[in-house]
Image (cartoon, rainbow, N blue to C red; front, side, top):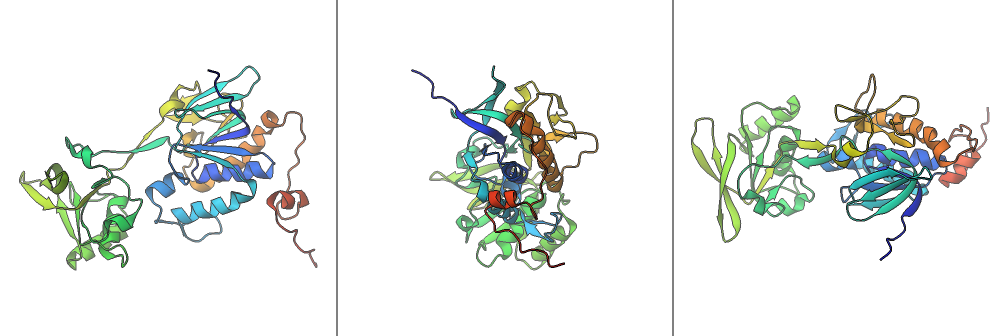
Length: 355
């Protein structure tokens, strides 16, 4: 059988987080169509996956927005460029071809042939740190959750929330207080009476415990009880060595996310401390035609901020043009005044300045 020919593309973007989405925008302004690949089944990357409801305060001109609101706004912004998304695909191979283009393959059989590749994969593929209790994995996604995608599923349930970071406390507070998502009971469990969450969040949690709207326990899950194929209780061992039974309907475990560089580590790119080394003129990697933007890259003075990733995506787009449109002169233009960019964006030109 003959393999299906790869999809030909100007640019392949690996990662559909905020920086990857903004990379679509900057390439679109330069009339470059992009294919976007992400291992997650939805766009948004880290903000959508880890803190969709948490406020972000350092996006220019937006005093505050949630992670999901930022992702939604970026999707609206890139809509005129109609990027092609390939979600639920982990890229396994990036290989230069004889004609200078790159063959991009995923574990599920997707094949692209791209003139330039932009790696915007955050710090790699996030995997939740699992609860190390033998046999408990059988309840994953039914009663054991490492992420909350649909809070409505847990309304009216007895919840045990394990963890001491922002995610654990935020979700415990959410289910204890949200009028539409309130649980029957919420018990927050952490191995010690100290937290890695924001002080205001810790204070809020303690106030709710004082008001008997939720409970806090010190200890760790060391086992579970089940009946008729369902988990009925967690066995919690405290610092005193005593194991107690905590009845539950669902267990939410937030022990942090472990970033895994994954296949990127084998693409023969210069790497320093699990990050891709880039220059600060074009954000090019050690392989010409491959660029890295956002948390995946490193350079002197690097700051892991979304707004810095936006800047990197802008320069990477211009840096890639010689690979995408060889020999073509591209002039810098402003979106406020360029009729060409107005056409690309599908917007009406502004009225003439009266002054």
